[in-house]
Length: 418
Image (cartoon, rainbow, N blue to C red; front, side, top):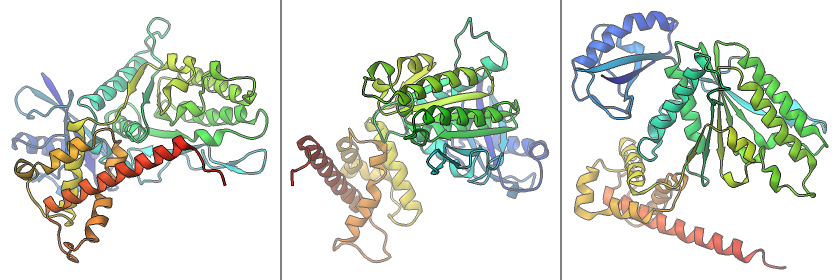
């Protein structure tokens, strides 16, 4: 029997989620069973007739393995009801407020967000990677938390609950970690009353004062320990650009500040302490995995390389952006597949974009629009034909590639002497 997860996003009301779940589950289930060919992996607004439709903001259907069968038949539905918190909501106001270092400067050692958050609604669905990557990460995270819940002896079976995503900059590693934490908050709502995302500001933990950095790391983990101590909390700890804190000690020479080694030692010690709690998951990203200390790499249960997108992923990214521009009224609504069969513009654009990061790809529509509006074809307040906009995107892409090549050649040549 296959399983489909039904994520029901609720509008803000004073009614508690358990009461809403009791009322809405039959109505949503009846809607799903009476409608065939509902979209999967895309949120939609259900037309509920058996209850107040204003209670539900959207419904998202996802198969366990990432596909999309119908709810009827041999499919079992798992319902997850949630209300997103305001973008800046935290459960412990002031816990990660800025402190003052030995030099009197303000230090914000971490950003703290209560999940699920409004700022991350829809993030998981918009991230496009190789097929099965997101589902694989979610499955692993759920399995790691299950092992902790059942008190599996980690002396016999290693389970550090540490995921490392590594690869070139701009490939979506940090966004994927945040989306994964948001997804866990939705899927584990019955096990944990609150889910916290604590994002460590790695660079803020280094001080120019001798031995101060190790103390900053210790103070940060003491705060995190306060959250973890409450078993009703699930704490997702995000360490972005972890090589800043866990630089390989074997690569340090005599000229390296001893404080850098103290930071690595302190980080490893506190990670070992915090993993003894079953309600914490550690997410780390790196642009330079080869610079990470081997002891940290050895602690990672799962290491995933996130590279530049291939043609199918690039095409999907472009299609999602073009659909958004059509919905916004900037580009004429046209069938993307029909246009591509006739002129092949989208295919050509996707193939020419190989080797670029997702971050770069997502900048092109704005650059293309600016370029197109400067041409003679542009009409004020008029929608742009799809073929014209794809031509403009190709021009913007070629200009971006030229600029990248110029920057690369300048960096190889070095600064010009004055």
